[in-house]
Length: 383
Ligand SMILES: Cc1ncc(COP(=O)(O)O)c(C=O)c1O
Image (tube, rainbow, N blue to C red; front, side, top):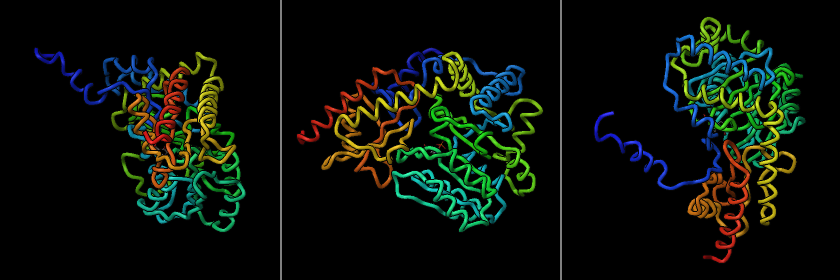
């Protein structure tokens, strides 16, 4: 770089990191050190042999991680919502009906995506804090036999609830429906067995449980869904799944330029998973972390927003004690050096959330819980 440019990076760092914060966010989350290191590599062409090798290896590792021997894994240069939209444009007939299950804000987004793409949502919504139960889905499908697909938010980030995906997918399949799964905040932390559970579309984003920066979306597609796509007109260009398959089959690449650094980073994480003993060992890390945070919060006298038995492995939504505003907890924790997540939408004041994705050594959790105790004491005393 030219003379006088030495301090430019520091100047920008002052904007984005004016002070150090430990992240307990809902995403983007803190990246693993291996990821940060890998992302400082020089770029190269996505039409090169080197890229092909990277793409192929990453897809193969994802297929194994998601137990998707029969499924097609694709990489998209977008965030997860891009593939949410793709699921509707590629696999639902124009004007066709979709049963959208809503357990929080991201289920509501799916409904908007269905509507804005000229399809018709039929809604099954439950009280926030709850999952959808298989019998509720069964009932809704009996009443609406003409829907083409069912959408399920695997993990509802706004309420900290994990849906019983395996059981819900079983019901949807018994009714002969396609199953679309928003796994943005679950993939990499909660188990997903793509083939065995009969899923048709599963998508996620890089900036959540894989602990990679944003910009890369992952989609998995069943043979049944892909067969249907051939007869769906106007699938668009950018998210035409069949076009992605063509590029992947012919040259292990994508139609437009992929986020190469994020793909390198994801590849690194999938290798870390292998190194520590495979997917189930990795998922145990998430389980233990979630359990530590949940019990820490309860020990401070607070209760969880999620119904017992359906708590998320990636984010804990906490009810604030009476008289305490969730936004105050969030702001005070930031002052102490911990970035949590605010309560979502209508629950901004009555809840706050603690994300547990990405890079998070155990001692950060202990320190964060200690700071939370202090914040609650201060707020109770009106300090
Ligand atoms: C459950 C869920 N679905 C969808 C999204 C949107 O994902 P993205 O921002 O990657 O498009 C999020 C983001 O927080 C999410 O948590």
